[in-house]
Length: 318
Length: 277
Ligand SMILES: Cc1cc2nc3c(=O)[nH]c(=O)nc-3n(C[C@H](O)[C@H](O)[C@H](O)COP(=O)(O)OP(=O)(O)OC[C@H]3O[C@@H](n4cnc5c(N)ncnc54)[C@H](O)[C@@H]3O)c2cc1C
Ligand SMILES: Cc1cc2nc3c(=O)[nH]c(=O)nc-3n(C[C@H](O)[C@H](O)[C@H](O)COP(=O)(O)O)c2cc1C
Ligand code: FES
Image 1 (cartoon, chains in turn red, yellow):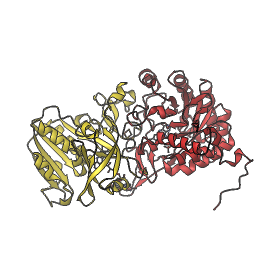
Image 2 (cartoon, helix red, strand yellow):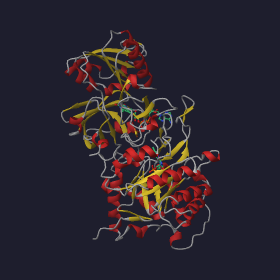
Image 3 (cartoon, chains in turn purple, orange):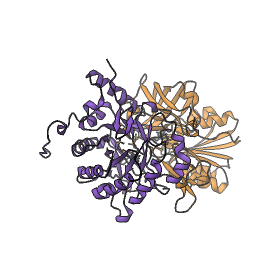
Image 4 (cartoon, helix red, strand yellow):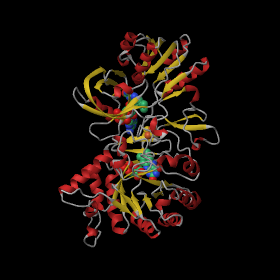
């Protein structure tokens, strides 16, 4: 039996494996190197970096919740200058691709950071984390507004020819509208989805559990939300999708591929067991081989009616 | 190897096996494990991230209580889902874990008269420290506080090792009634303090140490995400010039000279006088 191919392309970015390690969940990879084989990883998405250094939020920053966790780290990072000067060169010897992640508080921030990051050889592609408040427009989240998202993508696009992945927020009424705008503005791929907003309250102390009050929910709790988002976005755009949200097993990953994702991203599951990404890749190979499928790309979107017949939306049941 | 990787060179994923499970008190469990490789690499104050066998929750941070030969043990209180799951393990069961993690206590300063302060489950972090100090021929006093008599677990283990044990309970059912830090404040001055327990206890230890100009090492506890330094979910504020402060400029809070360090990576043990909490 021939070994099925797991290689994927996101624009001009070629990955040996269809697995990205989610931004903010995997450090720079060094933190996980003692526990995982980084050569069995498609790419590591670095923690989001901003124009100026950020100390991040006060503690507590994390709460474990049923089937997942809430986080409000607050983008703690050393800022782009220090990052380029003192950090990035250390990542050059990773046995997998490195994707930079950019966060910002104005359109100009995104362009500024993206340009500098993308110019570096260590960086194979750039992900735009648009789940940040826009300080120029009363804190509206970029990713929650299709035209704001488009402005960010256009500005970043103008600075580089390297692949741009736009990571969409699920905290919107219609994620497909944002997805289309991002595609039109020049995105090479879409990350679907970032964390879902949520909060938890300490009933003994009558206070929110996170210092930041609200946080981003990740883990299996958000998986069905993410699968549907991928399914719908896949119908709306032609560019590849990186599916994510609560992937812990090969079955979970397959749900995303079958919904229409070309690749998947694994974040919180690393906190359960750092061996999970490698296990998923191995079991994916077995799954495809068992079905005589030569390449992962053949099953992308196979459960998505839009990939065979025109899809008619008939409303949710129940 | 890049410098950042060198710091965790012994750390790895270890498949351990339960040799013995004992219930030391209601909801307090001791698991003794066959852990070749991990046991030998462990230093006092280090911890593991135990991977829940069901794979259905994040890994749990637990101190390495004992490390002898090829065996370690974990001592934990059943607090919620994850410790519940670990408590169901029995002899022969497998338990995978990441470890040994964290910087641990610095027992090298040749203290002659050490005070160890443990509150509740904090006792799990200090046995190896006590043993190392005793081996270096220090006098070791253990100040051990718990809510009530039943929750004073394994004190005899410390006595047998050669510690003077001073017990306090909140309700006075064993030892002195009151807080463990009250006992510490009343006792003759040690030349070094090592402590692990709830944050209010540690703050109080830090104050006592400052008043008496004694150096103190505190093992901090927080909710962990990754437990390996990847997520920045577990930080504590340090003086910017601390050797343990991560070397980066995001450090400055409102212009003041403070750095957020990761408890899991730069800690969990910090010098009390460097904390800015
Ligand atoms: C470095 C380090 C070393 C440690 N070593 C040890 C050790 O040796 N032994 C040990 O016993 N522990 C130790 N701990 C603590 C241990 O990691 C935690 O107790 C454990 O992770 C709890 O996990 P859990 O899922 O069982 O409980 P969780 O479900 O996480 O609950 C923990 C606590 O929060 C409360 N809680 C959770 N959710 C809610 C809610 N919605 N509303 C109200 N209350 C809530 C629970 O009642 C409980 O008191 C250590 C921690 C660290 C960081
Ligand atoms: C602790 C933590 C920190 C995160 N930080 C970032 C970040 O800096 N930038 C970003 O784009 N996404 C960040 N994320 C989101 C993840 O990359 C991922 O998209 C999300 O958690 C959903 O996937 P998962 O359920 O597999 O974790 C973070 C998630 C967690 C849990
Ligand atoms: S728990 Fe993730 S950095 Fe400490």
